[in-house]
Image 1 (cartoon, rainbow, N blue to C red):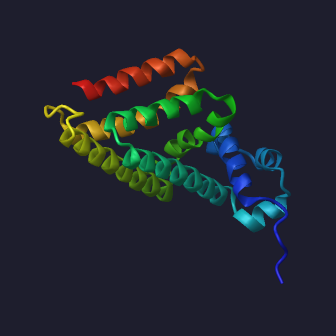
Image 2: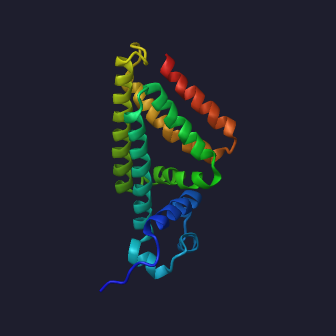
Image 3: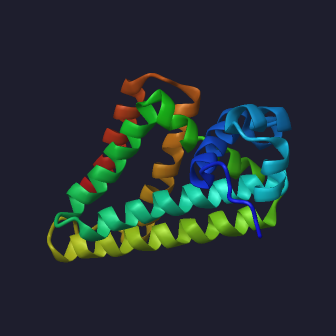
Length: 194
């Protein structure tokens, strides 16, 4: 009979997101993980396997939850503009929060892994395509409702919004000035007015 886990595996994944986000994949040592996760070495190996296995689990947990949240928000917003605006303002709000932004930096670590890890590359590529498609469908709906100009190239705009959303994480990594994030969001959202 297996022994019950003495820790919350979801909480450990959140802590792992912070550790990998802070140190990056390459910079994260076993000791960083043990200190940050608050679990024993054997529990780490028994539950998550290798450092890479833990990174993949934490990354998939983070990306899937965030992407599902964005998709739900866009699909359930009556106003397309309000939905897209809400996605960007919420992203900026999270990135301004010192504690919550640490988790977000795992995506920065993931992008660094793409040239070296096909599983990470395939997962991120699939998720980016999924989100781009939802942005596109949202913009099509906005155009049919008269919220988005008929002059817009919607496929290109969907791609831009999707990558702009991810780029906010990199921006937050290099500056802690909230005005910079606010200006970035303002300029990004102005693309809806063209």
